[in-house]
Image (cartoon, rainbow, N blue to C red; front, top):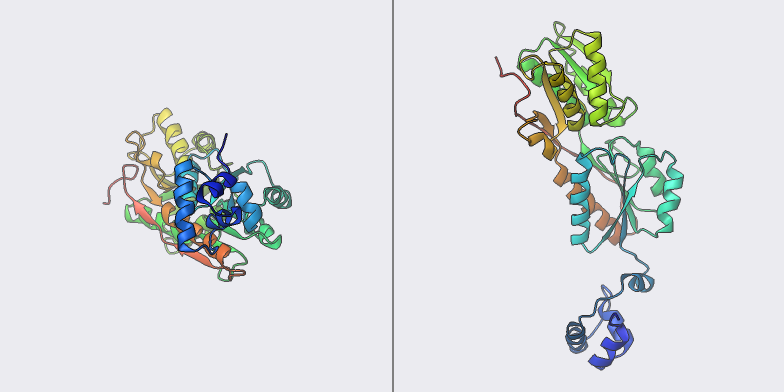
Length: 333
């Protein structure tokens, strides 16, 4: 049987309310009483009941961690870092899969049933209105990997997707490619739209460069494979492709290799994210690094700020990216 608060109080020779205050953050307990309770709790190996504590404090410390792309291995890294970072702060992540959910109100109701203290929307494809639905319902929210706005309605932490697109285009030009393309993710995703805008914007001053664009159905291996198969059937291919995501790039790479097309000798590739798999030697993908740890660390900091303050002003943080060179682009001429 689990040790109870009553048993700790009896061994320490104090009231049950004193033990309850000892395990309640911010509650007042005298040093002498605190020492007695700690000694008794250690001796009995007592662990406070989190659910019972939430009834006292009105806080569950549950943080809803929601996403809509569980098929992308990139988010395994994201969830690993998020869950560890939240737990280190004494918070409890509640992982929620919204892959087939398009109604934000339904998602809000579901998370309210769990009495979450806050929500982190970890998605670059969900519109900002999705996160705003939580805010409107009185649930503190951070949109991680979300779309930047100068005057956001909710807290946003992400990268400059437009600049990431420009970065890829400039790198292709620097390496002498004259027919370049963007093989983007889902057309309706805000991240796709912004990366495409930056990519094309950087090429306005390059009239001699041929540019083409296409969209994959999802940020997934299969979507990358399928879209490259379609492009190969149409032919001819561009000299280099900026893919909207690493796992999409790996699908493209596999389709090219299966067709006997060599990367980077025949076709160059740039991905985006710098997920762990991109560093595998059989992939060796040149990519644009998204500062995942920084995005997650700042997101968790903002959650803690929201829990500590009644109504903090929403902020948007834009973090820089960098090109990570590996083996899927030809050398600079």
